[in-house]
Image (cartoon, rainbow, N blue to C red; front, side):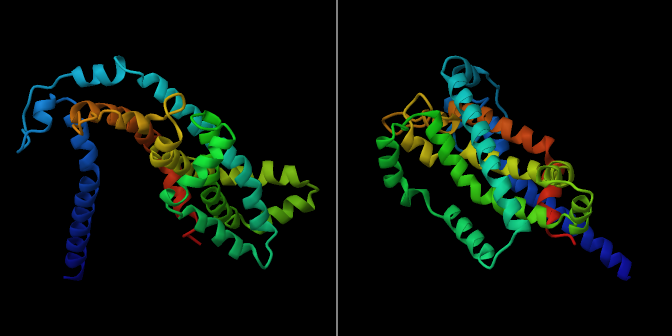
Length: 276
């Protein structure tokens, strides 16, 4: 009787999990399907379940547009922002993990609190700084900005992963005469790869999807894909929903593929600190 209830509970839990997963995935599925409709069908209510698909929206969004320029901007900005955030965050996390002081935890909490600031609250001083330093509408400006935004997240996650490294392993390396670089490169770094992958992937998602700061600090030369998607809105307020869906689908595909490929490292990294 108990075993039967246990199986029933597992089945209900599995069904609920699948239902929640489908509910979360449904907007992406709907956006994907809408990208193959005409503009008239895209705004039709109730929406048609069966329709003749068309590739016209994808042709307009990808080929007859500066899509590749926005994609190149996004890749360059995201890549160098992650590299810069990791270059600054790894030694910071190492110091906070293995050379802790009384203020380490409070410093870490303060760093994370800056990540919680609403972008609208800092856009004016940021705009003035970018204007005075000639960083408006430049790749370098967004790279520095996004690296700074991801820095607290990188330090927070990598520090938790480093704390999971058995200290006995580090002591053994030191007894064998390993210096600081050998200790990090040959002992800690190989054990840190899942955490690095998870951290880089999360930083990529936050950077790739960021819109508010990009639309206010760029005009065209350095605008990423998130800004490009918003251009499918006419001055009269009309939305080109089908074309916008095609552009948005193309914009999220790299993130979905990266998440799918690195899902094992991501799950391992995110759960590493919760398992003793």
